[in-house]
Image (tube, rainbow over all chains, first blue to last red; front, side, top):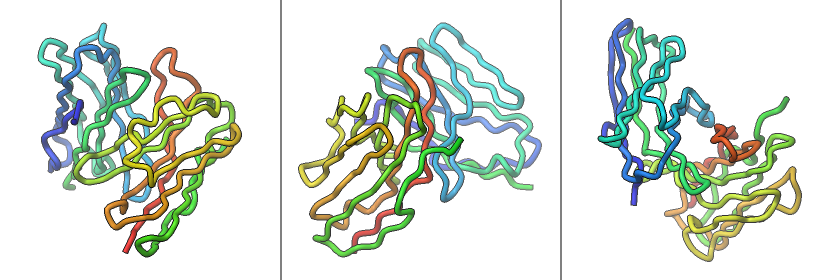
Length: 110
Length: 115
């Protein structure tokens, strides 16, 4: 059973606009959350993370928001660039394991 | 420093054949993970090792799957016999420790196709 869910399999955004990728989790014991980015024929690479004691973490164009009461996190990319086109995986840490979502394919249109 | 190295990158085999996937983690990393990526389930953890010892193999689908880590620099994932539903991309990942939720470093994956 999926403990981390990404309900949007794909998202298309115009270059320069904001991309918002969403993620929901079911286990309230999760205390650390990460986003990974994956290009075709490559392994996922770490992008940004957030601890459960925070509700926002920003790194350049990337910001992750955490809403613990809703068990929801989101990744904002602004402004979006064509090089951001990739599959984004949300992950939650718990029980010495990372639980991943199914991924959202982001396409940034030039 | 070299990243996580996986081989083969692509494997096409026939149903019933044995498949062996290989992984060399980043030197000094204590944890090694095997994941499988499918469209339906995303990245699923199959098994992970700490200091070469298997810790959690609850994600291994069935007895046809086995994994070993004979030393700190090498791990294998074996499927015997393989079935078409095993077709997926298999990723190996490593990390230095779990104490403070460090991120995983993934290899480029092994794409398996079972005909």
